[in-house]
Image (cartoon, rainbow, N blue to C red; front, side):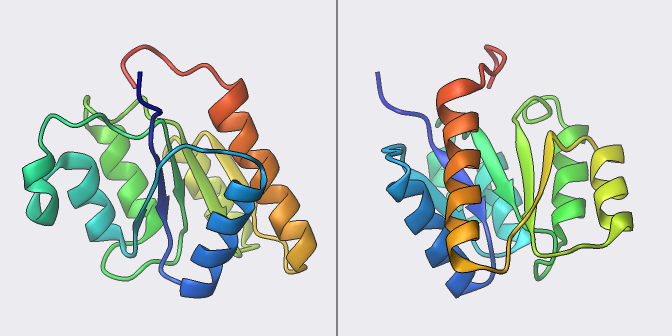
Length: 146
Protein backbone atom coordinates (compact mmCIF):
# COMPACT_ATOMS: atom_id res chain seq x y z
CA UNK A 1 0.00 0.00 0.00
CA UNK A 2 1.43 3.38 -0.96
CA UNK A 3 1.79 6.16 1.57
CA UNK A 4 -0.72 8.96 1.49
CA UNK A 5 0.36 12.37 0.32
CA UNK A 6 0.58 15.58 2.33
CA UNK A 7 -0.35 18.78 0.48
CA UNK A 8 1.58 21.87 1.52
CA UNK A 9 0.08 25.13 0.25
CA UNK A 10 2.74 27.79 0.69
CA UNK A 11 3.75 30.75 -1.48
CA UNK A 12 6.94 31.71 0.37
CA UNK A 13 9.90 29.64 -0.94
CA UNK A 14 11.82 29.96 2.33
CA UNK A 15 8.84 28.82 4.42
CA UNK A 16 8.27 25.97 1.97
CA UNK A 17 11.89 24.83 2.34
CA UNK A 18 11.78 25.04 6.15
CA UNK A 19 8.50 23.12 6.33
CA UNK A 20 9.69 20.37 4.00
CA UNK A 21 12.95 20.10 5.93
CA UNK A 22 11.14 19.88 9.27
CA UNK A 23 8.79 17.16 8.01
CA UNK A 24 11.74 15.12 6.71
CA UNK A 25 13.67 15.67 9.93
CA UNK A 26 10.69 14.22 11.81
CA UNK A 27 11.17 11.04 9.79
CA UNK A 28 8.05 11.35 7.66
CA UNK A 29 8.50 9.50 4.40
CA UNK A 30 5.12 10.45 2.93
CA UNK A 31 5.17 12.17 -0.43
CA UNK A 32 4.66 15.93 -0.08
CA UNK A 33 3.13 17.88 -2.92
CA UNK A 34 3.33 21.68 -2.95
CA UNK A 35 0.86 24.22 -4.31
CA UNK A 36 2.11 27.79 -4.37
CA UNK A 37 -1.17 29.69 -4.48
CA UNK A 38 -4.81 29.19 -3.59
CA UNK A 39 -6.05 28.47 -7.09
CA UNK A 40 -3.32 25.90 -7.71
CA UNK A 41 -4.31 24.20 -4.44
CA UNK A 42 -7.93 23.93 -5.58
CA UNK A 43 -6.87 22.69 -9.02
CA UNK A 44 -4.77 20.01 -7.30
CA UNK A 45 -7.52 18.97 -4.91
CA UNK A 46 -10.28 18.91 -7.52
CA UNK A 47 -7.99 17.46 -10.23
CA UNK A 48 -8.65 20.24 -12.72
CA UNK A 49 -6.48 22.60 -14.75
CA UNK A 50 -2.86 21.47 -14.74
CA UNK A 51 -3.85 18.46 -12.57
CA UNK A 52 -6.70 17.18 -14.75
CA UNK A 53 -4.54 14.24 -15.87
CA UNK A 54 -4.49 13.02 -12.24
CA UNK A 55 -8.25 12.44 -12.08
CA UNK A 56 -8.99 9.48 -9.85
CA UNK A 57 -5.78 9.88 -7.83
CA UNK A 58 -6.07 9.71 -4.05
CA UNK A 59 -6.62 12.95 -2.20
CA UNK A 60 -4.04 14.02 0.37
CA UNK A 61 -4.33 12.80 3.95
CA UNK A 62 -3.83 16.33 5.29
CA UNK A 63 -3.53 19.85 3.85
CA UNK A 64 -1.11 22.31 5.46
CA UNK A 65 -2.52 25.64 4.32
CA UNK A 66 -1.11 29.15 4.62
CA UNK A 67 -3.61 32.01 4.91
CA UNK A 68 -1.84 34.73 2.91
CA UNK A 69 -1.78 33.24 -0.57
CA UNK A 70 -1.91 34.80 -4.04
CA UNK A 71 -4.98 34.41 -6.29
CA UNK A 72 -7.18 32.92 -3.54
CA UNK A 73 -6.55 33.22 0.19
CA UNK A 74 -6.17 30.20 2.39
CA UNK A 75 -9.54 30.97 3.95
CA UNK A 76 -11.19 30.99 0.52
CA UNK A 77 -9.56 27.64 -0.26
CA UNK A 78 -10.79 26.24 3.05
CA UNK A 79 -14.35 27.42 2.40
CA UNK A 80 -14.39 25.77 -1.01
CA UNK A 81 -13.00 22.51 0.41
CA UNK A 82 -15.63 22.39 3.13
CA UNK A 83 -18.42 23.18 0.66
CA UNK A 84 -17.68 20.14 -1.54
CA UNK A 85 -18.59 16.59 -0.52
CA UNK A 86 -15.41 15.22 -2.13
CA UNK A 87 -13.09 17.27 0.09
CA UNK A 88 -15.04 18.31 3.17
CA UNK A 89 -13.52 15.63 5.41
CA UNK A 90 -9.86 16.15 4.49
CA UNK A 91 -8.06 17.44 7.60
CA UNK A 92 -6.88 21.01 7.03
CA UNK A 93 -4.31 22.73 9.22
CA UNK A 94 -3.77 26.45 8.86
CA UNK A 95 -0.02 26.97 9.16
CA UNK A 96 0.57 30.71 9.16
CA UNK A 97 2.66 33.55 10.50
CA UNK A 98 -0.53 35.55 11.14
CA UNK A 99 -1.23 36.38 14.74
CA UNK A 100 -4.54 38.04 13.94
CA UNK A 101 -7.34 36.83 16.18
CA UNK A 102 -9.83 37.41 13.34
CA UNK A 103 -7.88 35.03 11.07
CA UNK A 104 -8.05 32.32 13.71
CA UNK A 105 -11.76 32.90 14.34
CA UNK A 106 -12.61 32.92 10.63
CA UNK A 107 -10.59 29.74 10.07
CA UNK A 108 -12.43 27.83 12.78
CA UNK A 109 -15.79 29.16 11.57
CA UNK A 110 -14.90 27.87 8.09
CA UNK A 111 -14.12 24.39 9.45
CA UNK A 112 -10.35 24.21 9.91
CA UNK A 113 -9.15 21.28 12.00
CA UNK A 114 -6.22 23.13 13.55
CA UNK A 115 -4.68 26.61 13.50
CA UNK A 116 -0.92 26.76 14.06
CA UNK A 117 1.20 29.88 14.09
CA UNK A 118 4.66 29.49 12.57
CA UNK A 119 7.20 30.41 15.24
CA UNK A 120 9.71 33.07 14.21
CA UNK A 121 12.64 31.20 15.75
CA UNK A 122 14.10 28.66 13.31
CA UNK A 123 14.52 25.81 15.80
CA UNK A 124 11.07 26.37 17.30
CA UNK A 125 9.56 26.36 13.82
CA UNK A 126 11.28 23.10 12.88
CA UNK A 127 10.08 21.53 16.13
CA UNK A 128 6.50 22.79 15.68
CA UNK A 129 6.23 21.56 12.09
CA UNK A 130 7.80 18.21 12.96
CA UNK A 131 5.29 17.65 15.81
CA UNK A 132 2.46 18.77 13.55
CA UNK A 133 3.47 16.34 10.83
CA UNK A 134 3.86 13.45 13.23
CA UNK A 135 0.44 14.07 14.73
CA UNK A 136 -1.48 14.32 11.45
CA UNK A 137 0.40 11.51 9.70
CA UNK A 138 1.24 9.01 12.43
CA UNK A 139 -1.29 9.66 15.22
CA UNK A 140 -4.52 11.00 13.74
CA UNK A 141 -6.99 8.52 12.30
CA UNK A 142 -8.94 10.19 9.49
CA UNK A 143 -12.36 9.03 8.30
CA UNK A 144 -12.33 6.29 5.68
CA UNK A 145 -13.35 8.70 2.93
CA UNK A 146 -10.11 10.73 3.09
